[in-house]
Image (cartoon, rainbow, N blue to C red; front, top):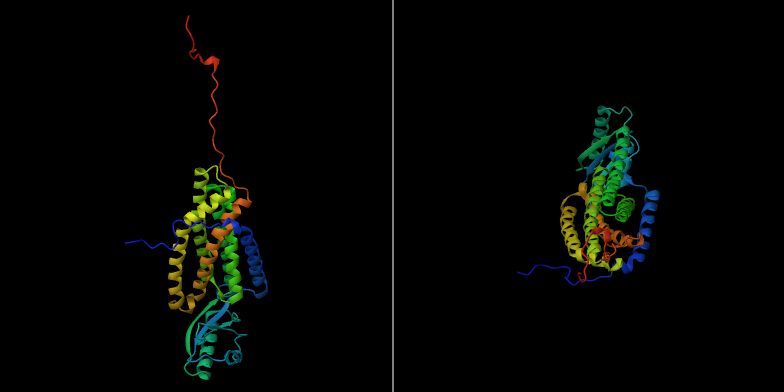
Length: 325
């Protein structure tokens, strides 16, 4: 039985030739992602923004204006609505933290919303609700940022001690690119950004560094094996040698994520979308950004060791070759 080979054995793609185009595209995408986050802002979930979030499921997609009007007249605060799911029948209603802040006030607000929507929209069903205080949400924001920053710093330090400092810098640049692309995607789509997405970002970082370490390790091996070869040729050879593994890993992960996107429901849709984006972005940055940046950073192969002739030492007492008297 023949093995399935998506990438032929004799593949020889000149990835480094496009490095300047890749650097330009990476810079443009990074600037666009930062601008999107600054202008559109992230749609912070209750975990980070604080407040009360209620999900209501309707028989048919309702008018968001009618739902907002029904909730605003209850006196529980200004409501922010967002349609959840592909069919548009589920709406997430976000309310500010209730004045007293205790569990009784929260339950009273939830019961008011449930009763008002059930009365105005027959067949509407209450799905779930969650609440987070402002103090807790602030702590979660700090801890989430700290987790991502420490993960990136730890990975860069590992690459520096495991390989060379150039590998650590290139890895850090590629990972920050992956993180910023994810943030820009959520600012553009306005998917809810909560603790699940922080977990997705950390998972994307783990996937990206896994691919980068494999390529970097092959580059280091080829640097020792082909010491006379140009660095550009070494990187192209290393990336092409690891390309079948990269493609197969990405495809298998995408198959699992596609199933999760279709059958996982709207609760996991943001997490799954972030992971799918991370697979594409992480693979791109591993091949075109992290590897090619090593040339710009001045990485070179070890020089070839040359055998120098050993001069005889007169003080060594070695026998003199010549006629004996």
